[in-house]
Length: 182
Image (cartoon, rainbow, N blue to C red; front, side, top):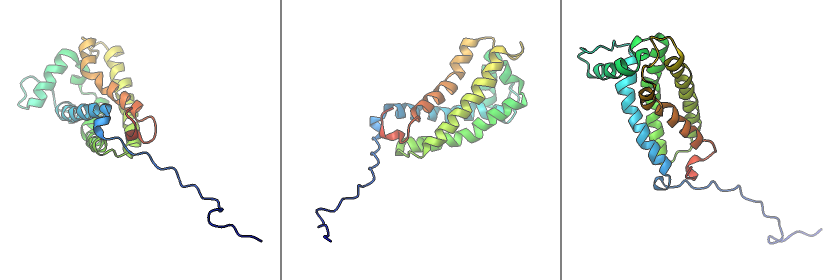
């Protein structure tokens, strides 16, 4: 029986190496997301916290956030002014849960943490479903007192909260999202 020399022995193939993440400057879509989700943090504080806490949106409030929300809702969004409990839950989730995700997402985008992919997919799916179906449904097809009187302005204000998560969902469609530009 002959033994093979080290040169003749089969070499075990090494596991394929994980591709390296691209630096942030080479991922322009992620820079865009950084800007947008930073803005979403601000809008959660300004808008969603008011509705989530059930603060009455009246013109003469001493709370500046309530005044800003009143200006918007009295002109474009009567549903937002009516405080249905289900909308308070959706807004409260945005103000007090999604805002934490936005912070994590921003850190993950900057650092290139691929583990954010699953959480981004869960977030995007939830917000598209919770905003796109009940809120947009009522705003366009609900009772007359809850429908938006100005669909164009409503979409201008609220469309990004569905479109940006949809874009994020598309961005996170494949494993290791930060190893590619899109």
